[in-house]
Length: 208
Length: 208
Image (cartoon, rainbow over all chains, first blue to last red; front, side, top):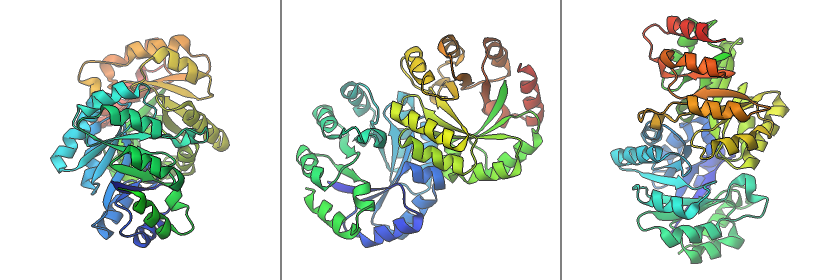
């Protein structure tokens, strides 16, 4: 199991500081979508240059021009790039072609997918590396969490590994760990923690 | 009717040059998704600074954290920001809140929406400015074009205006103009033209 820290709202300097403080506990640094919208691939390059032992995920949430957009992220140094599960099959397939070309990985973000089981089965056959259930930030306030969706995905995947994102915190991490996922994504619970190193260490210690 | 040029694959200097060459013909400069993935809000700021008579659309294709991400685009100077029609209602509503705050506009990109008529009716009630039918780049090779989808949207919208994107060229623009749309988005047909000024002028002359 890997711990992924979603870096969405910090400046680049704050991100680099966080990754330095939490060294050894965070396996994957996610350059979050708002960060990409603001700064493009600049943080991907900067993190990759400074921390060669941490994988970098570019949360580009690709929706079209799959191969072209994934190429850009991998060229900048990303190890993993996200594409949306609601996109056309051709887009996901384009991302997979790009990943194979660069020897890197694709994560499909299943945010807002309507028929999760059916779409997971389809995507699991496309050669992607990770299928990530994701409770949207915009609906977390309604009390939704990603555990039930994780169970649906785990039940049907045969090729990809599962990942989970959306409001994961210390009080919910054990249930997720027990259900099983290759990657657990944590955002605010780490970024907004008073002691980010201690929180990351504790979270990492809960993983199997 | 407005002509929107989608700037997806050019460098920033090439974009500024194109907008200079085509002055008077292009109403909206779209900073395309791959351009945002590469450079963030840098091109939005640069175009806005240099061309104050051209509207700038940030094709962020927002999928979550609607208000937060739209805020970032409007703060950078965007006049219009895109959100995906496949996103959760809360995300589109967040983008609308952001637009109202800044006195700017939201376009919903209906790419890969399954039940176009039903989703258009829902979104038309959310206070968005434009609903854009969009044949994905990744499926244009199969011969699909956005005209039929435009008819579906035009039939049901009561509040928003329609827009159309996806492989529009000189040979298909008249049918779109006759069907009616507030914004017509053209990408490759302008960016890859030998004479971009002449092509933009001709396209603009076809609009009503």
